[in-house]
Image (cartoon, rainbow, N blue to C red):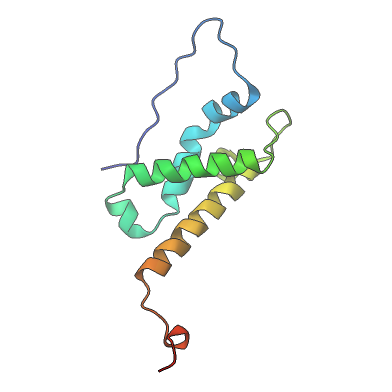
Length: 115
């Protein structure tokens, strides 16, 4: 099973898109691949497309909440993504992996209550 592929968008004649919508349409697939490529190996062997999509959505929310400048020129770097989207994606992946580690790690003896 492969990572979800976002279907090509067919613009309606006469439809005008906001700068944020244009940015979304231009970078959605690259952001999906960027996040999927950075998940642990077990997700790559049988990826959960809903997890990847959820993380992509969280990255968009974080980028927009962080003041993503959709009107200005964004610096495009690795994977064809603006740097602000890469930073948001990395933060979302970090929080996700940190949560996974907390769920799977045995409790530390140092944190155990004293007897």
